[in-house]
Image 1: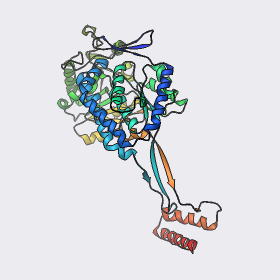
Image 2 (image 1 turned 60 degrees about the vertical axis):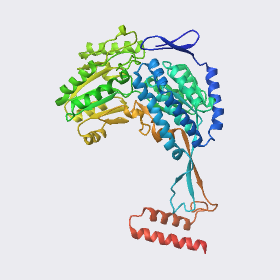
Image 3 (image 1 turned 90 degrees about the horizontal axis):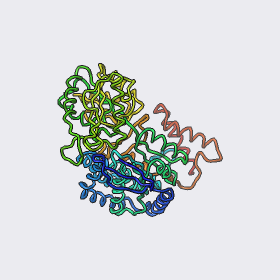
Image 4 (image 1 turned 45 degrees about the vertical axis):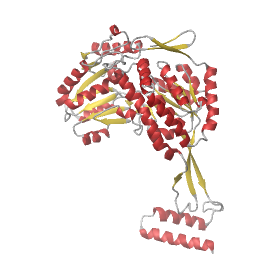
Length: 520
């Protein structure tokens, strides 16, 4: 889909047709440093703008996005391939929700003084509070599979928190990234406050080392390790949302007719090119056959095609390299004894990079698809007997982003969820919280650390400064030490942490007498 020329440009192609959509220049080192420097200057003014004034720009952004939602969704579909309806709901809708969430929650989370409680015995007459101050310049390095929603959500949160932002998108979707920045500027955010760097790994490294204060990265495990190593050179904090290998555990009390459609969607939405797509399907033996039959039937009916067609269920793969990789994964599994129930073939006859959604059984640990994140329309299926067995298989992966449990008794699923090693666990559904700004999104183990969405992400964009205020005067712990000060400290500890009412009462009496003597 993407190529670079001798003139250092990125050529964007429609993966459904292979037609050229546009061309952008790769940012040079000086351009990147200049972009960050301008963002730094703009930040010095922006950090003093009240939160509610910043939110006026967010509201204008929301209005622009709502008015232009179809054009933006169409651009997303043309550049990354997903069906138009998916672009609307998974990319555009989630950002509209983020805007309204920020308007509702940001003033309280960010503004004013956040009081902290102090011990009244030792710290009488003192007060303490936290200030939430912006960090500076935030680098957002984003992927191609959700090219609008992933970067835009973090950028909006960083801006509302008072920071400047510089976006470095995947070279597979440079045009959508340019549209995000354009929308933000049109919404009233100062132009230099919102920077754009185009390129790949070299440009990402240059951006990180150009003077930013935080890095937000979404991508592969390998990419996350590289980002972390670069950021470590300057002790720049990072948030990493990396790969996933979503295990879906289907229990025998499930109703096959009620879950087959959802399981199929969770596996093949966006052609399976989502870090939280179902990557492993575990079916309890008693229900395995009816569930598999219905999923197989639903999968065979999925219609491949250009995402701009309202009749398309599954769009193209992002580019030829990914399509070739899926062929390799399927062939590796078949060579090692797996059985292909449907799909699993490239469809070059359709004109773009299309791959038939595949369902594979007979999976074992020697296969690529058992160990690696697939990130495509291939669903490996395994049968299990006990819940303990399924949980053990689910937890065996080094990845721990998302998981799901499917059961006719949601409370049973909630109990099992406690044993599943993942940052997100859904009961009888999946992926939907990607568009819920109040729901934290992120993983454990090799899936990274930090969270997108919610107050957790918003507060990652501020420095929490604690301010403690006291009247002038000598405290019991100041020099010079004395028997009286030591007795006060001992009695204070007894009053606060003593085991009996009698000991606490005695300590309180001695403290009162000590205070009275002090002021006589």
